[in-house]
Length: 244
Image (cartoon, rainbow, N blue to C red):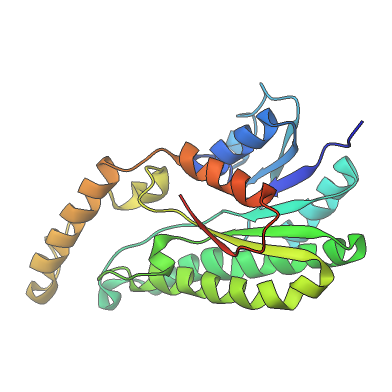
């Protein structure tokens, strides 16, 4: 009998992460579904091969502790999906330092620290795979998303460099680039108001926000991205980037 493989996914409380956890569980994988919200740890109780863990990607101790526990529980981790991320949109001048720090720490440092933490395990096993969830925002740009674009372009560069660095170790690196997926990552900006903005920003930001919300309302289901992630994991080719 083939031993069940194990996948660790960050940010599984909703959206792409949640759908990916469910898909892999239904496909017969052991799933370590991680999240930072303790109140949502019970969302996968109907799935016998999904085990939930607390993990805050902004906390290096949380990352290493979680990975150790998953290895103790399942014996081995075969794939890590760096999915946890947050979104912001605003003129840079009006973006608070706290928001900048939070987005950078989550979307860039969180991916780097989680990846770094799993590499020894993968190297010792002489195999492993890292799936980094980037975005179409890592390939093209729009106004008022400078911080978010910065983080996603960073993930593209990180992933491409690691692709070559880790290939001789039989550790694969792949990037999945969602488009306008309808998830709660946009919840924080759904009711954004630019009424108090300086005149120089007000009109253009209002037009941008209207465009963004229209695309959000017509966005596709995160189930599609979950299927793309599953395809990437099971694709034996040397392909680096996958779009839904």
